[in-house]
Length: 302
Image (tube, rainbow, N blue to C red; front, side, top):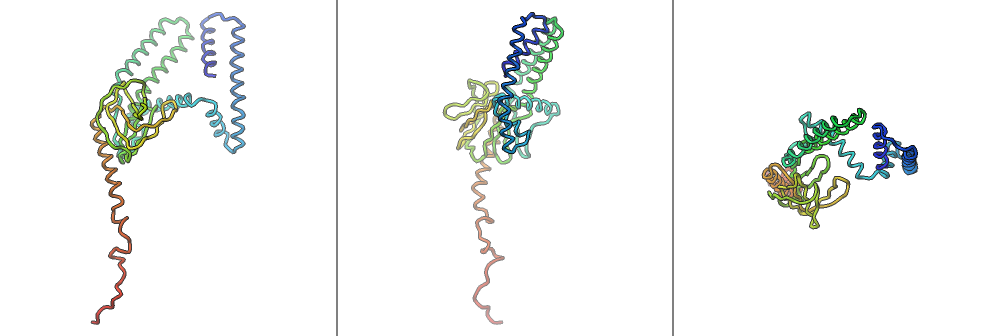
């Protein structure tokens, strides 16, 4: 399905551009497209009907059939793209995404900002060059739409990183994010230590070592290391799940991030120690002065 549709689009572009294609090739290509679409319907309809018989609404049954047929990586990429476009709107309005009261945000886009704007500049130059080179108006219009949309997506990815910073929340918990692609939460109770630690790991955006160390690199670098007392779960950008006991991530101000994490972890430990010792929870109600039982010894006369 995902291979046939781009092929159909390429075939249409060739026809518009005036490329001569034999009739047998056209007929075979169209038959292949129709066959793939019919196969998709044959696969999805029994799934849809089964969910309807199970009591789901039409919308729920349709979504269940789509989840069963469309790979999770494709679904997540589409969701990420929509969230990035939403973040572009937030960036234009100078707002940030879901920062609760008392939370401290920490940006991480410093190492990649110059690279992203370089991509935007190169894409703009490419769009102008193609507009001058391609003589066919319709093909030029199609490529112009594709190029402009690509530029918007690059800007939206950067906007998503700006509007979705890392957070140290009021209760001391840590929320690591990379735009709309990655989101990890570590409760304050499992944060053992945090330190400034600049590293330059190999690999892509998210990398997990065999010892359970997660590297969330920005511009191929991390500046903060957080040690946990127990592993935390996370979901990779394309849907795979994993766990990590050591977190390494980038923060533009690593010292402030470490100070906030250390303070939050200390406050969480203090609360855990002091809560069982509060008078309201330890002193029985029968021993409070207002409720003390009267003495059985009679009062002296007079």
